[in-house]
Image (cartoon, rainbow, N blue to C red; front, side):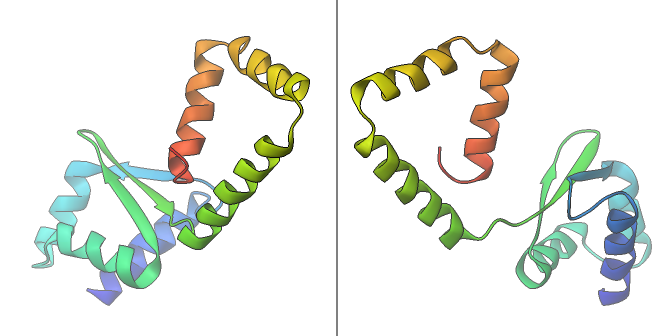
Amino acid sequence: MKEFIGKIITTLETNGFPGKKVSLPTEKMYEAADNRGLSFNKVMEVMRNEYNIDSSVESEKIVFSKQVDQQFNEDMFQKAQEMMANMDPAELQKVQETIMNMSDEEREELMKKGRDMGLL
């Protein structure tokens, strides 16, 4: 299994991992594992627990990403709360207006980043 995971990690790194998320074809990944007598679900579990690599299985692709440190997320959330508590009403209003003036795509990207960081 370690050799197979090593090949996956090499492929991910060739495509920009860990700096960016990388996707690989779902069907081919399951077939490659099966051809080696492995469960790809187990492979993903080992990658998550031992290599800090998350994976999200979609119908056509599996998206791999580097795990974000949970303590870092909690610290960032705490700092954001403190900053908002210390903002005067005009500053808070400006932030709210900025968010409201974003396009749907920009707002969705902001929400996605918040979810990825564990803030939402």
